[in-house]
Amino acid sequence: MRTTTPNTPHIRGRWRRVGSAAAATAALLVAGLGTAAHATAATATTAHKVSTKAIAAQVAKAHVQYEKAGCGATPKKGFAACDALRVTGGTTAFMEKQAALKGVTPKTVKPDAASDSPTGYGPSDLQSAYGLTSAAASNGSGETVAIVDAYDDPNAEADLATYRSYYGLSDCTTDNGCFKKVSQTGSTTSLPSADSGWAGEESLDLDMVSATCPNCNILLVEAKSASDANLGTAVNEAVKLGAKFVSNSYGGAESSSDTSYDTSYYKHAGVAITASAGDEGYGAEYPAGSRYVTAVGGTALKTSSTSRGWTESVWKTSSTEGTGSGCSAYDAKPTWQTDTSCSKRMIADVSAVADPATGVSVYDSYGSDGTGWNTYGGTSASSPLIASVYALAGTPGSSDYPAQYPYAAAGTSALNDVTSGSNGSCSTSYFCTAKSGYDGPTGWGTPEGTDAFTG
Image 1 (cartoon, rainbow, N blue to C red):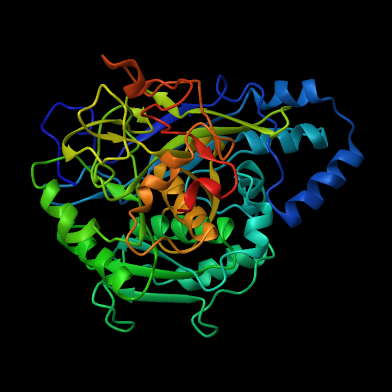
Image 2 (image 1 turned 180 degrees about the horizontal axis):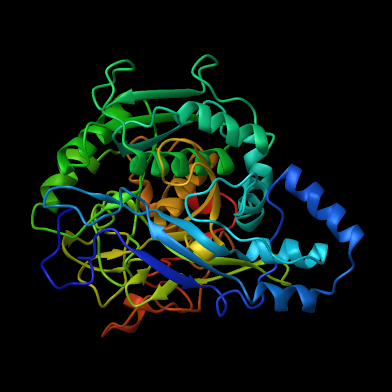
């Protein structure tokens, strides 16, 4: 979680990019966002007949502008950045599809403006895409997924309530015991200072847990700053408070200190800890490089005519914008990882949706960074999603490091093998290019149910 050396692709600060989804979504037929949105889509379909080919042609026009969340600027040494990207303008694939169904001109996302309804994937989409619909309905009760972020989001609980209400999910509040927000010391009253950039990240994380494991309890642990030590202390506090599933949607450049951070903060037997692989294309990041965490890469998720109904490829917008991956310079290779060209820890293990063009719906009302409904991407979306899949699968074995679980299911129908796309250029092909079986950008693939996430 340290600053990289000057003149590397990681030194960019806060930025704004145009991410064209035209090529990536030529065949994208985006599914409905949830119960309310499905009803809208059904009505629209009845009102205006349109062919699948015509919808695909319209969706191919989609392109969006997006920016790093306010917590994503390159951090100084010893601090972390979040891995969240917020759509600020343009027309998403979902909006193009809805417009085609209705026979109207597509609307656009306006920078820093609230949308009155979602423009990204919702719970039903994610559960459908990853074979989780049944598990999400019946599993997760009594399990706690912890989210570790920096600074306070004063509106976290209220925004979570808005998201869950829109999608017809059960209440998750402090009063009913489902939701709890604490500082890195466990205090519910002495919280860090508020930060609008990290608030957007926190909303993204909370909404992804809700979308994937709606029956799970949620623990939000807020570090007093984005320093390595404070975020690591927050991870320890989450485990101390009983969470068996902990998501970390942050990271930065590797350093020789990483092995000591491993044992101080991320080595927790019996706890599934996930970490974002990064959003800056090919290259290793920490704590995704820790052998004790599940490193989560990112994909572009699109609907298709296959039996699954979805298809995925490596998320890449440009040579410096896409999912992270690579061979760690410092962390030892875990015994369950057997790829032959990386002698140390290889990133990633598994993956899930992260492309902003096929991004997820988030509700955030704190600060000026897009008040209301937003669409987010980045591996900050995929990390809490995978942590929640672990929760649906059940409590890990007390002596296990659950990062090894997907390796036991490698090559089986429990994982969707991602075989197309790359996140940059590399001398060893699988470090940056998808292929059949294991590859760096997507690991062993994406969830198809929960079988790959249990011991």
